[in-house]
Length: 194
Image (cartoon, rainbow, N blue to C red; front, top):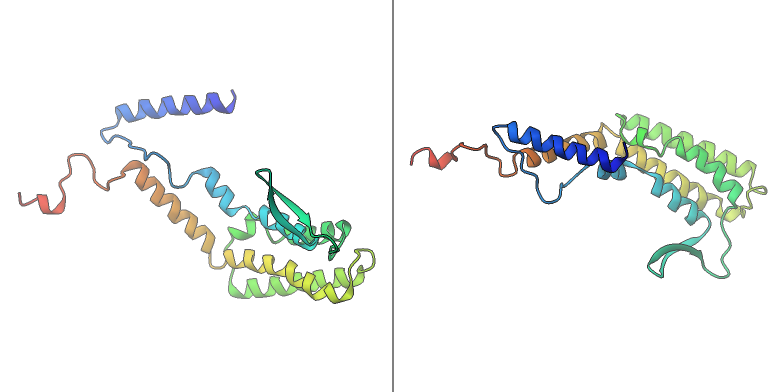
């Protein structure tokens, strides 16, 4: 069964369930949040892709209706592809959906940020020639790498992202099941005295 057949089967099942229910399921024309949107919102992969391009000193342009990354003429990358790959392996250990959906304390956020900063600094300082890094760019590169790590960790602070997503899903379920906030046959508060 392919995805299209699955969707058709699920739609048919929803119609049957709705016909049997005393409370009809009324769907808004476009659901505010669906599973794909939730995955997209929590997926930090675009941040890592952007980081890789920024370290190459590339800027995003729109060309023929497509977004492309290009380096300006005369500007050299701050770090070569070997170095970018090496640090992204470390960064991905932190900038991922697991971290974003975690329950971290402020101490966790601070300690992990400091540790990734130490690891990246040591790696870049030890391999600066191999990675094609000019020494004045070292601190800029470390900051560019540790900042997304810190932001990802902050999203997991005190279940922040997880709590937001739970709330978003609950409000979406409420809207999808009961878009007007009233069950069929229920009277509004002021209609009780009529």
